[in-house]
Image 1 (tube, rainbow, N blue to C red):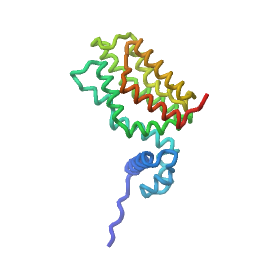
Image 2 (tube, rainbow, N blue to C red):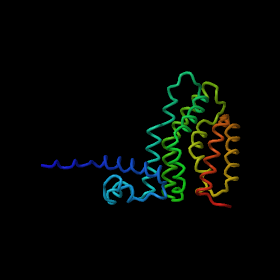
Image 3 (cartoon, helix red, strand yellow):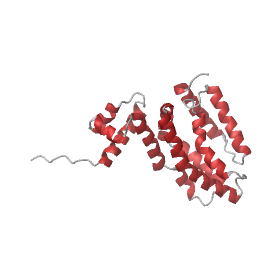
Image 4 (spheres, rainbow, N blue to C red):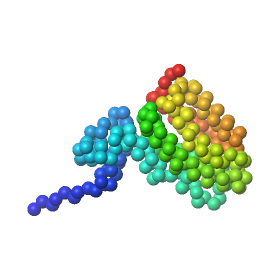
Length: 220
């Protein structure tokens, strides 16, 4: 007698769908991957996908959030007793740079922010999740003297919004204009007591900005 197949729980379906979407987005690309491709990979009907995600864009947004929480750079630096606040932020940026899969997913996700609903959800998620984390590190740096600013709360609210201003799908700009905006931001942050510009982060960020501008930017 053949064994009956084990019925998957809703949570198992959701996890398998996100896992398959991640693999396909990384191998084929977001634009080239269809909902049918994802569900074929997990052995389910398209209707199962729409039980969890109203659109492919929503699945991409959820996947980005999930990947951040699975490899949270803030958690990675929180218990580093030998580092001051500024050094923890610099290490945080280095840890973030090392997560190449999430960087690739985030780069592919730039185009979906043209949808106002997705953009609003992303801004809200960044405010809710990232602002308290930034505030904790900035306050630590202010207390130990490594960050000289009176604007830790304002910076903690500003930093999660910077990426949206640099995205050409949100604020149309040429590659040159986007790079100029990035350099402007680094100067502003340094003037506010948060010097973050270094050769490694600058080179990485400029390469990402060039890619997202060429992929989804609008020439002005």
